[in-house]
Length: 208
Image (tube, rainbow, N blue to C red; front, side, top):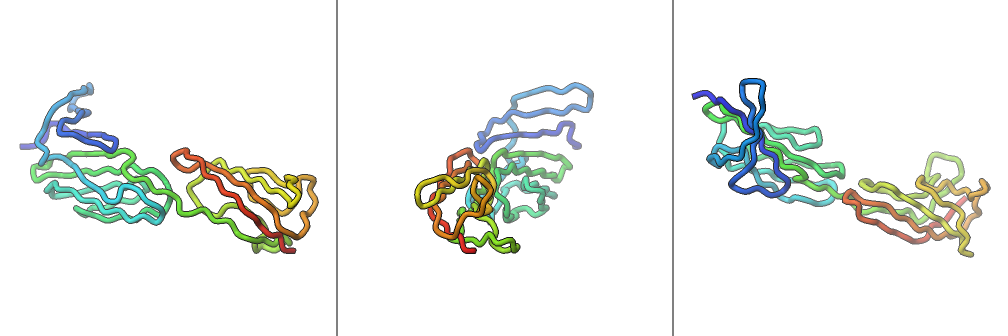
């Protein structure tokens, strides 16, 4: 018997046996219904791990027996395997979707919002840099991904601020002159993907 309805279920991290469906009818109207259906005919899946740092390898598994599977990992990648494994190489929060096609030709779709959270790796700061105009190590700043709203402050050994801004420091003071060789103190902060505050401080040496 051909399918007369298609279902698309959307959840955010948690699911139960009773779900809310968007029902698409073959006519122009769209209706919302809350129904219970046979779980064995549903597109459903589990994943492990749900979060981690880049690069993050995630295994996906569905117990649903079907003739076709179409995965959308949320980062532009996809798979037609039943139980695929996927590596996330960029920080972000990713929705994951699965579309199955049953032996009766029925299609069922499930989208799990915020399924995978990929955190940036550690944020690094070089211990020295050489702002001498060549293309190597000309600036100082955070090295890493997955943070935003960065703010960097740099102080000389007497506690005077010589730089403040979002961009990496180019070794010049606020007056536009070259900062002399020596050790400087930096204070840095930014927000991660979840809005949490990141803070770092330390010293950096200018070598000319």
